[in-house]
Length: 501
Image (cartoon, rainbow, N blue to C red; front, top):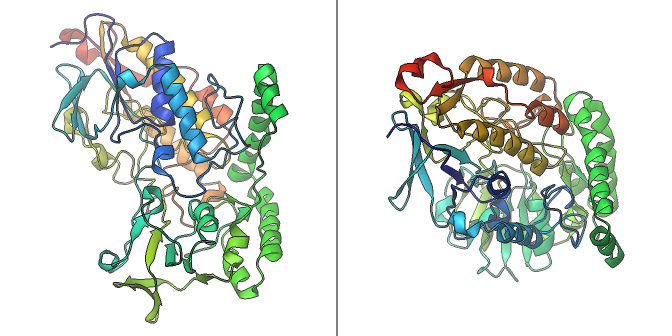
């Protein structure tokens, strides 16, 4: 077939987390109805479906970590817990009748752009093929658990699972448990399991800067006020937004402003950790902000528990019933929990995405993922990423960033509705110039202070974070500049002109 000859635009979204559902809701609001969400799991929710470990919660306040166009007035507490956040997403999906658009248990394995039909041909694990004029991957950056490369891990005879794939059938009561990793997930689930276990070996590669979490339940009066006076709800959201937005300055320009957080961490450790040796191990040796800053009120008290042994010697291997550290010291355990984070820089893996001239996206991104405004990739027409390269934040709500990206994509889709237009492809030089400037800006941020983090590839390229204010990203994406794209006509004679029909 040639291009679509009417205003019907078939769209496929990959993933049903905050990005995919937000995109779907805005499609309906904008009058686009021919779309399908392909979801690999049997239910929606993305990271809030996958991460069901004890104590799972958000580190951004609920009123901001939610859609601006779908406020929830009855959040139970300032920082939402996993069950409530997932329930919120379910409610949004129900309100917009999105279930009729979702194909569950449908994992995308590959997608190839077919120039002749100006369509994406999308393959799924069940052998089906789906076709769409537009492909919108909304897979997120934290969806592929990172499994540590530890010799003998597969030989361990007891329960072993990643925190993002928590095995609720395993009873940890009375067991000797090993936790490998002390990142954002571990500081939430470790305090929950310490009271149950007989002992806990906590294997830490590096400490984390941990500051207090200003969390508490909302009172009934506050919930009533947010419901009865929507303006109060909106003002509260705005207050949260602007209060934390100023932190971008500390991460991107004036790193010394973060030094006060060192004092907070050390103060918490002194207050809650009795053993000076254990306390010293918990304090990082890298600049604050270089890795993710964590918030918790119960991390230090949990590590202080006599049942917890903080181990900082490197792990050499694992055998059938023990973790073995440097020097051959065996730590017998009954169960191992991996709190080792995610393959955050492996965007869209393990899918195989093929664009024009047979370009393989994984090959194009072999030195680190990049996109124009984190959304479009040269040589991959009508492909729009949500939560793509360099759109992550260290200081505010990713939902705000997602809404900015969704608005930009809607502008592109309105253009593509024109039956005379086959496809749009961002110009390679615009993408290159944009990312050159972006990486130059990143080089002056605290993330380049000398430590390795999940924000960066093994080679040291920061592929994840946005180096600025969220409102500057919104301003940047508020306008679609057609000169940034090659626009291909529906008529073969005009195709090479790079102009709309």
